[in-house]
Image 1 (tube, one colour):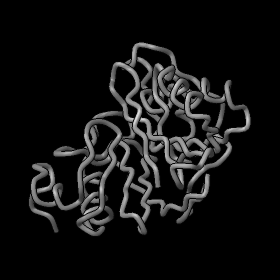
Image 2 (cartoon, one colour):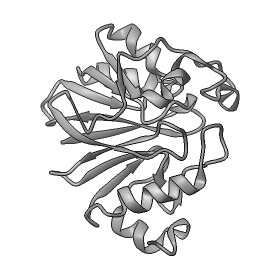
Image 3 (tube, rainbow, N blue to C red):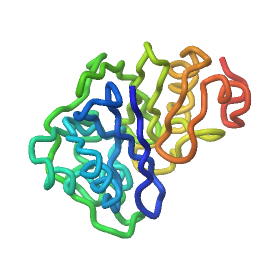
Length: 213
């Protein structure tokens, strides 16, 4: 798997361009955020074609570039958890006010509800549902390579905010402890903001996860 990180927007959201192999030209985009020009340049410069966009949740800083990608690659499909689906089309629900720009996209083509697995661009992931930062937060886990894309659920040394509409701190911590911290400790975590980390590091050092069950 080849993972390229493109940091987008004033809120410094991580967009991930993921390919099955470095020579692959088809890719999966995870969370194309605001001010997506660097992402578009990266894709065009490297001759890459996004097959699918996955939004780990529906906040503006993670979906702000979707329509720009669609303009350049009209066949790209968008996937999001059903619980966050309305956030794509509603600037109020996606908290555009915090991004200081109105973000509104067309509806997604795919909605995750009770789906357990997801495949695109030659990649296969397990879907892990982690509401708490938003009602429809998800993580993507690749067991063979030990990689987790955690969105705004889990960060290096921190966890996602839960004071937004649809947030639930107790639920967020429960999902992290019982869905993410049970993964192999060497699992490498690619969060929605900030540097990569590992499950081992977060189990040992994350101050929000003390007193694990």
